[in-house]
Image 1 (cartoon, rainbow, N blue to C red):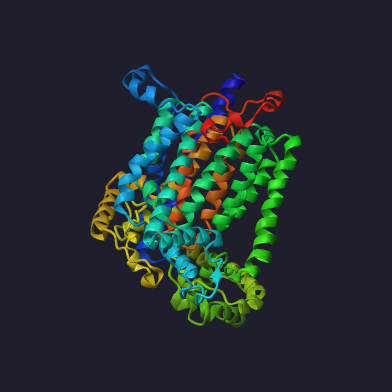
Image 2: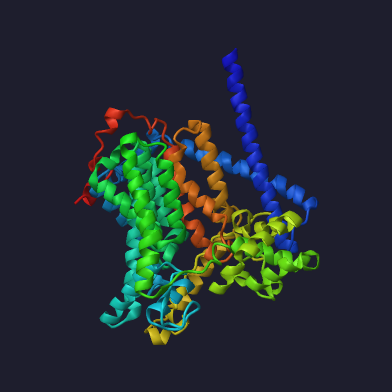
Length: 586
């Protein structure tokens, strides 16, 4: 009788948690809908029914997700018979043959995108980095020095391929080779996810579904072949995440292998070098590992932690930057959200504010800060560069910001929610205005290299087949806006809904056991919420790691056996052979 009551109590708590999540998602989407229609938050009857409608949609999303996980959890006899020939070819077993075969399938499915977008998709940020490489004037400098606004390692990476192209007779060709290398690295990392999930117990059909998703979900190949800093970071972070999960599973014993320890250390540093937030994600993950690894392996985690701090906190900024006259990135990026909130406060309440607070905000953000405010992005307010003379006003600004929070909290909330609307808004039942703001539109027209400033001076003369590229881009983006499909291509689906679903299912299935193995996924999610723009095309870059890691999370959720069961003696036997495909070992 007591057991039945406890089971009933647990079930009711799960239902309460689920309904609460649904209502929160619905209310957040309703707030975003009001901002998109009116330009500010309006509580109305529409807000009420919109909240209920999206809450029901989220419940349906969870129901479908659970049915999909149930389908992934088993290999039925009928499936085995129908897919016998395919299963003979693709076993997804942990070895070099399956590793390269899986990679080859992904690359083959991506070839049409690679061919179509010759000579490679250049994003705005990459164009600025190439201008620095070729000493051309750009947003951040006059061309005489580099800026770390975009990670210098990425500038060096793209510049090296541009220089290779120059040697070969075409800078465009060099960048196209860079696009191919990035595509291969991405495909290799995604194949690692598939084979690793199979290795730890995921069903064949789950791994096959992952393969189909990575191969045909158009956002993934279109981004993976793009020349942008996040594409350099992505495969490194995927490998880091897979190895991180294995470290948690083995309680750190797999780091006994010198090869694996060196790999974990290298991936940790490279993740920080290729993306600014990569440093903080790695630090958070390393600290979390200290609580789960066996005592004798904590020193290895501390070594990685200290190396990360020394390289990124001392060696790079104190030695490398001064030696090569590289300018540090500005403080405006990390302060984008508070700057945006202050701008809206001045715009609405300048007459009510303390004159000293208004004065310090003007000194940092300019006298025209109210006119520069745009609710969908912080770039207009924060700008792209930072004047070091403004540092003297930051302490005063902090006090002014806190006073504003106390005096006008609703204004601060509105400015923040509006800035993060891409992670909260749902492109169904909402305003038809600019639906691409809430979806994941593909960006292919960057294959026209002549559109980059100073393209001729840098040797960028290839325009590619821009007419055909535009047609394909428009067709894919129209497809994303079809009913039902628009939810699949929603930014909120992958940034927020999938995350909440994974967390909910983890605690429902495993009662929260070993949740630390999700820390790279959790940390990535948390850093989404300081984004300076979520509805522009740049927002796609921020959410891509969440899209890529979701299949790994689903793979672990679909496994019925306890993949974390271990003992001290068993874990001591971990070697590189147990976690690294044979073909990758040297």
